Image 1 (cartoon, one colour):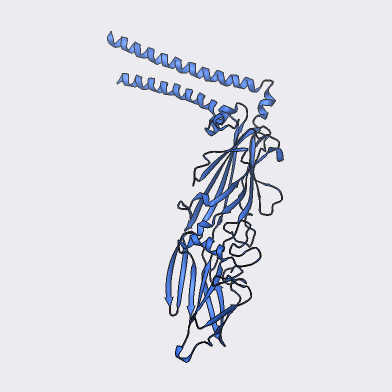
Image 2: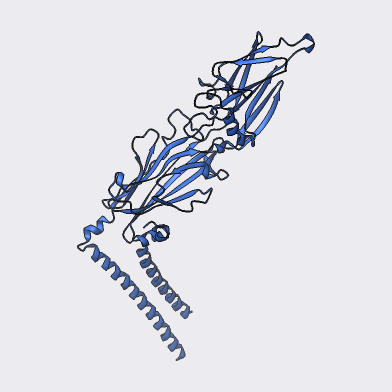
Amino acid sequence: MKKRRKASHNRKVTYLLFALAAVLLLGSAVGSTRAALTYYSENYIAEFALGQIGVSLLEKSGADAEPLEISRRVYVDNDWSESQGELLQKMVPEGEKLILNKRYKEELSVENSGVIDEYVRVRIYRYWTKKEGDKDKKVTTLSPDLIKLNYTNTDRWVMLDPDVKDKECTELYYKGILPAGQGEGSRAMFADAITIDGQVAADAVITEKKDGNTTVITTTYKYDGVEFHLKVEVDAVQTHNARDAIKSAWGVDADALGIL
Amino acid sequence: MKNRKRYRKTIALTAAALSMMAAVTAGNAMAYFTTYVEAGGGQTISLGADTSIEENVESMVKHVTIFNTSENNDCVVRVKVLSGSKVQCSPEGPDWIDGGDGFWYYNKVLTPKGTDGGRTSVLNIAINADELSKEDGSFNVVVVQECAPPVYDADGNLAIFTADGKANPECWEKVYTNWQEYKDITGKEAGN
């Protein structure tokens, strides 16, 4: 008798849980159905257009007369149209060498290349590498601050933690909406020049060798052959329901940053 | 045994219910339109240079030429001539500029070995030893040469010369002072 009652109790629990699962399933299905209905409603065209988001990174360097599109990612015809190029290819004119302390033109801009307005942020990574065999190994003893990117248009961009030194990643958030449409009105420049600080040559080892009447002093520079890198990531997010969208996509509080 | 089987069923159903809930929530969180692009690039820094000095003495004139023996790197050079108090030396040569600090500065950047600009023009050092008496015996004229990586200002002009082409020893010292702390000047001494 006792056994039967226990079995019946267990069955009840199972059925209860099964019913709960069914209700949850139904709930999610109803949600989907509602979404589908909205999708095919009168607002269909407007809803579809919302997906046409796009962003491009532009560079004007060396003897360039106009900014050139380096990378782009735009949603067109239900698919992503994307391309990715390389920065700093024209920084040093052909046949010349990189000069320490010289200010090189490096105008970097973000362009809204989609058909909807958007909020944008830029993350800039500066770091050093050195070849070891076939591999590039990061040099962590050289400060990223020796790669001096001159930020411009600073009243339009909010920099995260501007006082922190030697950081590899700098984050810039564009204040307000970057309107769609391409061209001048859809662009926001954030840097205009790059300089490599001569201090990179400051660390050296000196050796002295006597050869008859001649003393030969040789200096070996610790950072001879290092390579500096600049990497730029641009993120864009919709303006509709911006507060939540920015929080969800970038993990930051747009109100606290003052970018809305 | 039977009970354990039943519990397994219960746990499986509960897990399924929770997964469905999670899936529904995740769907909402990802429903924003976003996009991104990225690009990167870099350049290599070549530092350090090595030089050799060539000296010939003919009719009390010492001819000095300096060669950049580095395979890749440019450098700038300067030369100092040391002699006894009774020996006067007068260096002169095209492209050599008297810095007024005892050094003579070559006004061009020496490009790497084997290139057209990889050697200096000749610096002629006229030696006047008339004041020496026989008792003084032989004398030495020592040439000290230093080379360093070329340093420029923000406009790309060589920092060790002024805009009107004059040597700027103060700037050489200023630019390389920090570096001297690290003893980063390459130099050679030659004497006979």
